[in-house]
Length: 332
Image (spheres, rainbow, N blue to C red):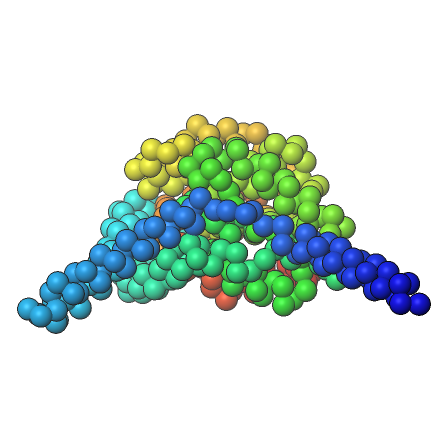
């Protein structure tokens, strides 16, 4: 009967449409916008424009000067990175961690100078939604992940990690911590929602993988939740657990909270007591140009792992760190 056939096809199409919407809801529960992405888009466009204008204005008189000056403008952050490594060297003289040699510092600076534009001028401003959250039914029963980025970052920081985690068949959610310059305590509800989503999908507490300030945000969330049972393991990478020397130059709220031996850091540690029931790995480096002196990135009672020669952003993408995290997901 034509009428019945049409009705049957309509029901099937409606059912398929609902199923597609359900899948989208479960695989792309990402935030619709990122304030930080817009800020970094504007900064990237201004930087490229300023570099191009310098080249055009100076090309006729001196092509060499035009190219050198244009590159100097484009890689302006490289010179600030160099200053950070000088501060690292000076502020870490009394730290018991094996001090970085000059060749190690130079190599770390060069690697960070190459990595930083990829993160701050491409992945975060323009590609932060390119890897959707993964909450597929096929991930049920496996350990899942909540990715928590650091200061002046967004979920685009984790693009390479998310790709590998998806390929390994694990559920994950990558958060955006906003407001960008708000209190770290305000990020707890964002993390809590992500943990709930991953747990609901997998049926198991997730692994939290955190970079920089993200490690403090994870601890603030644990303090707010009141129990460590909701997380399987925490991996922090270059996180200023005891604050960091360089935050003395920051006057935004979360920057002040991360100052060396700040009241906020002290109160957080005091509230945790012995951290009984926690399972934590802390990766740190003697060449971290943001979190220093080096031991400030460690926690008492944690599995503290030193990776010599890695800078702040570079540390998060070292094969040793990524393989260790994927091993935790597979139970090894």
